[in-house]
Length: 165
Image (tube, rainbow, N blue to C red; front, side, top):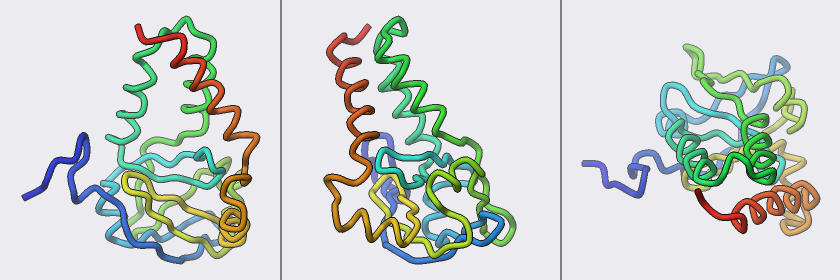
């Protein structure tokens, strides 16, 4: 029996840090437990920390539902939504061996090509880090990718201040 947790079931929660590699073609083998929780088709996106994130399509849809509650005439909402979607890649599917191809723009921005990678689950999202970048992040969690994080938060704060529809 699955226990409901908001829009997620217990089986969809992601847990268990792991290490893997991204090959020279941008393919990554996610642990089976992660692939099962993500579903047959899932979303990859460049997250606010600058790492790659993978999430179940329901999690992605839920995030959009939150954004769409705000006026589409709001510049802040439009910028926030544009960043949300331009950094997202839908319908990612593992191949028959369980490997997933990281979209080219995402692998370049997240430095995920022919490298060691850290898989760091965070409940409803799994972070995929270049192992070297992850060590830099751990050394300065508050400062890492700060400019981008501040920009996103600024758009989000403006959107919220302008109010819901």
